[in-house]
Amino acid sequence: MAKLKITDVQQYVEDNIGVFHLKRIDGLKNLKLKTVLKKKNPYLFKAKHMLTAPEIVQELADAYISSKEETIFGDWLEGLAIFINMKVYNGRKSAGQGIDLEFDKGGLRYIVADKVGS
Image: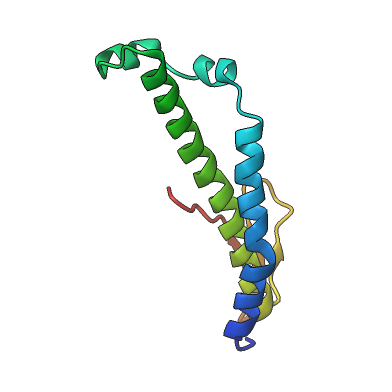
């Protein structure tokens, strides 16, 4: 097991945090009201007493942004976990479906599915 250098983690974050922000911006650029509306129950707006278009659009945008950010950030954290595991255990991104990373330790193979935010 190699010792993790915090400077390596800091450098990874500095090199990769921009990707997180770019994906957030791209998600907003590609946001289409018609697409978002298809995923929402219109009766929810009535139940929440949202009666005007600006209220509904704001609610849709907030929900979309929050969901998109959680997905993007989860993917980013997965990359960070793989990077750290690679540094410490010589791990790697798994090729297996639903498996995030693999590494060997003490003669055993570890297969990890990371569930950030679940």
